[in-house]
Image (cartoon, rainbow, N blue to C red; front, side, top):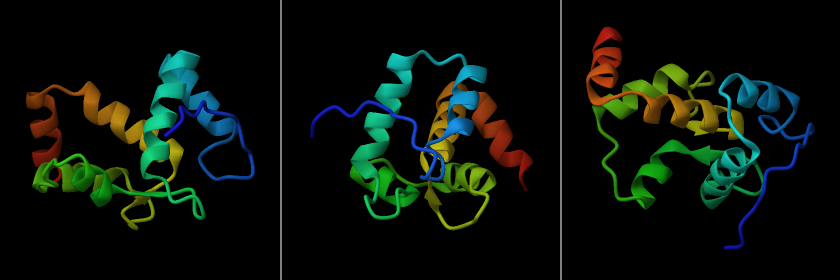
Length: 111
């Protein structure tokens, strides 16, 4: 698939002004935002502009284990197991920013 750069789209949930504000808070450069958006687009349903969490894990041949399930349930406000780009960005930035000990601690604190 061709590389897709992020372009602000206020009419699509998770791809407007709020996303840009969050990316500034996370100190993401435009090139990083473009790379993350490109990854999101690999899994995005073009009609809903959402992606399914389980599909991401399955397509990457990564088990969707208890720790990941708990982590994404906490971040999934709608409890739909689907994410827009903003949720994808925050979820994966958080997930990948934690070391194994911090991630385990976070997941077990949810019980």
